[in-house]
Length: 424
Image (tube, rainbow, N blue to C red; front, side, top):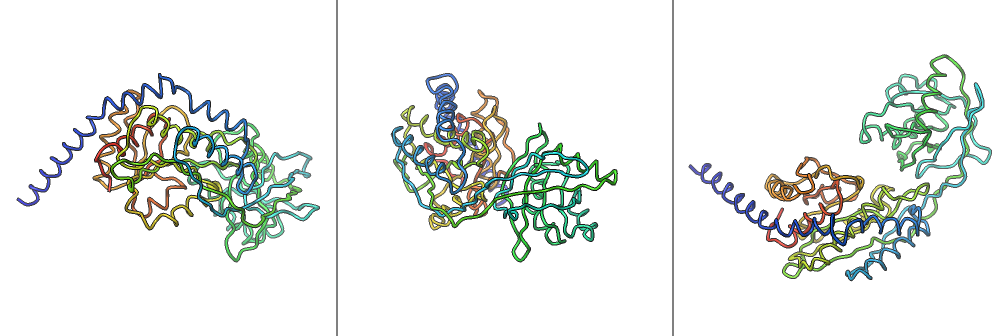
């Protein structure tokens, strides 16, 4: 009898939740109309173009990253938002000049990009024979062949989440068996002779050796040569170095809640990028989406009950450094954070929402996404994750990274700041 009562009570509460969420259909339509068809149409894309054209690449520790932070502080302040900066210390790795050349069995320049945190080579470079493997397991089986060689990892692409381990840990795994450097097949399912960069991690107590990514095409070439039994020799030159940590800032903009200003719905993207591109997709677009949410709510004259806060992280590419320091500073008020969101999965057509939270919180989100029907995005996926929001998720705060455009993120934040709905 008691169990039946609980089930009935829960169902009754969910009906109330569904009714409350459905009551915001008109607000949802206003948001979508403004973002997709109205005066704000394509505004976030224009902002992104202005930003990336003005600043360019924004690698951690660089002057251009700090210019980007000042740019966004000024732009969001001029937009009428409450903006401030929170200081953090961030890594400062410098690429320097770099090159790779196959010199046996024939001469060929290898397109390459050094990996973040890599050490450099001696000034004259490293000239060594190559050992090509396709997995960590194969490296272990052939450990006796690796001493003094450059290990080339030609691992097949399975998924980014699985295959990125070779970029992250390949150098240390190869160093354990005596390799002098590593060249990693770029972590991508598609290549037009285009190497990728990214962060890599050295393991404590393991010799640090230079490491870089090469193209899929060149990794496959060396694999075929090795399969034929041909000796491969490569010369690798890298000036990479790590300088002392630099001063930087997380950029925070918000609209204060009128009823519960201490309660926060947080959305975010990161301002930093790598040094070899303009960082439009990773993650200039996510930063602009996170700003646009506040702009849309302000433009519509909506008053949130809770504080709606956008944080533009610094040094995400180095492992979520700025976000971790923000969490360390604010975790004392953990219970005041109702939902954390991160946009760092692209700025294409809306696909789905990924969500991590309790069953009760998920029920709320299931009702919220029904309001996204006008933009054909009502799918709610499990296991939401993101580098910058991961500390909050691990602490039990509901979170989600959107595969989205700004109207979707705006709608969700609106529902959770205007209404009395609670996810925790």
